[in-house]
Length: 309
Image 1 (cartoon, rainbow, N blue to C red):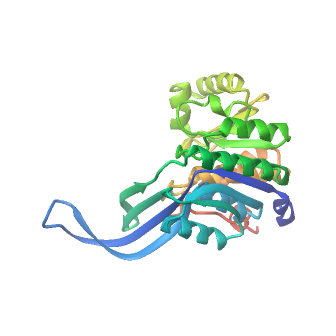
Image 2 (cartoon, rainbow, N blue to C red; image 1 turned 90 degrees about the vertical axis):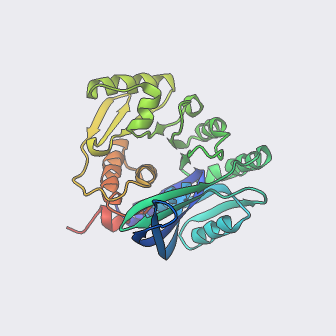
C-alpha cells in the first residue's frame, strides 16, 4: 500500500475518548502502614486513549482522520484536546462544563502495571443530541465511519448513526461493547475480541462451532461481516462468502492495551484506501502483532507495517 493510497482514505472516528495517564515508578520497599508496595513516581506520561487512540492509529497510518467526541471542560479534557492538536488528527471535540473526562491512571513499575484507577461520568441527552447533529454534518466528508464503543455513554445514538451512514453509502465499522448488539444492526463490520464474542454468542468448542455461531449472529444483525480477534489464535472473518482464518503473527506479547484499537483503525484505513476486506484483515493482523510488543496504548507507522525489503 502506497502513501498516496493511504492518504486517500477519509476516516471519521466517533466514540468514547479518554486520557491514558501513566505514572512510571520505582518500587523498592513495602509500606510500614499496610502490606502494599510503595511506588516512587519518577516520570509521568499522557497518551490518547479509547476512540482517540483509534483516531491516532488511523492518522499515523496516513489517513485523513476526524475525531468526533465530547470531553469535560476539566484539566483532563484540556490535556486530551492538546494531545489531539499535536497529531495529524482533525479534532472535533466538544468540551462540556460539568462533564468529567474519562481518565485511566496507571501506576507502572518495571514495565508492569501495579494499579489502574478510573475517573469518568456520562454525557447528558442534550450533549449527545448535539453530537449526533455534528455527525450528520461530517458524514458526507468521509468514506468510512468507525464507531468506538467503550460503554461510557458517548454512543447512545449508535443505531441512528449506523442508519445515517448506510443511507449515505458509507461503510461502518464498530468496536462493540456489552451484551446487546442489536443496536449495531446493519453495520458493515463489527470486531469483537474472543471474550466479547463469547459473551453474546456463547462459548465455542472449535473453529467450526465459531463459524456457525458467527454466521448466525451476522445474519441476525444484518451485518456484512464479523471479525473475531482471537489473540494467539489469530483472527476469524465471517462474511457471505464464508470464513477466513488468519494465523497470529509470531510475536512477543508485552502489552495488549489498545490492540483492538489498532486492529479496527487499520481495517478502516485499508478499506478507505481501496483494499479488499480480506487484505485489510491480513494487514490488521500484522498490525496487532506489532502493537502488542509496545507498552500501553500505541500507534504503528506504515514503515512498521510495510518495511523495506
